[in-house]
Image (cartoon, rainbow, N blue to C red; front, side, top):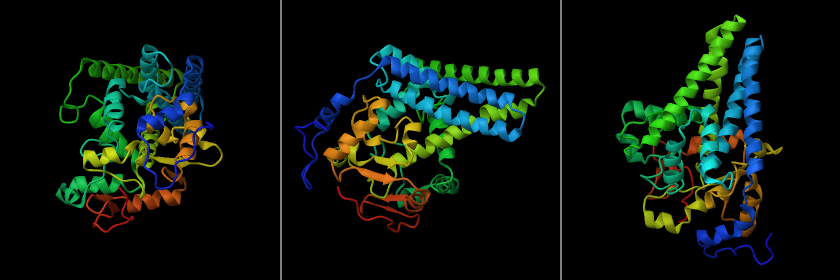
Length: 359
C-alpha cells in the first residue's frame, strides 16, 4: 500500500471521487501487448470450443462444447467491455477496433453498448429514471403494470431467469436495431455496428451449416450446439453478472439526483462478489467491481490490486459479499421492489425485506 495513505476512519466523510481515483493512479497503467495476447488466447479457446461442436460425435459432447463457447464468449465480452471503456490499451483507435472484434461472438453492437453502458449506467448508477439496468419498480409502479409485465418482472427477479432479462430487456430492446422509444438518438454508427454483428452472425451460421453438410451431420443440431447454446449461455452469464453487481440488500437506489450525487454512488452502489479457488480470474476479475466503477480507466488485468487498495483505504464502506447459491437466491427472494420513502427493498406486497439503508 502507498505509505502516506491511511485507512479512512469510521464515520469520516467519504472523499470525493477524484481523490479516490488518485489513490489508484499507480495501478492504472495499460499494456498493449498483454491486452492483445488476452484477446488472441480467448479467441483461440472459443474457436476450439466451436470446433468441438462440429468434430465430436456425441450430442452431449457437442452441447458441452457449446456451453464452453458461451463461457469464452463472456470472457471475450469482458475484454471488449474494457476496450469500450478505453481502459484495455493506451491507444484509443485500437481500443475501438479490439472492442468491436471482442464483441462479435456476443452479437453486441459496440456503439450502442457504449451509449447504454458507459454513458447511462456508469454515469448514473442506481439513479431512478435514468439507469435502466435491473432497475426495481416501486409498489405503485408494479401495480400499474399490465398483467404480462408483472409476470415478466416476477420471472426476471426469480433468480432463475437473468439470461431472459438480459436477452429481451437489454440486448433485443436496446441494442439490436432498437426503436425510438428505447433509443431516441439515431446515429449512423449505431446502424453500422448492428449491420456488423448481423453479418457476423450470418457468416457464423453459414460456417456451421457448411460444416454440417460436409461431415454429414444435422444442420439443426450443429446450429443449436454451435450458435444457439453459446448465445443463450452468454446471455445467462451476463444477466447474472450484472444482477449481482448491483442488487444486494445493502445496496441502495436513489430517486433524487442531489442525494444520489452526495452518496458517492460509484462506491456505494456496487458489490464486490468474492469466489473461492481464484474463480474471479476466470472472469477477468470483472467481479472486482467497485474499483471499476470508481475508475473506469483501470484495465481488467489491474482490477484485483486496485480493489484491494480500495478495501484497505475504505474499510466498511464497500459491500463485499462471498458468493453462495443460498445468498443469491435469498437476494432474489428479498429484492423484488424498492421503497424510496423507507429506503429499503420489499417483496411484491410491499413488505420490507431489508433494513432501512443509510443515506
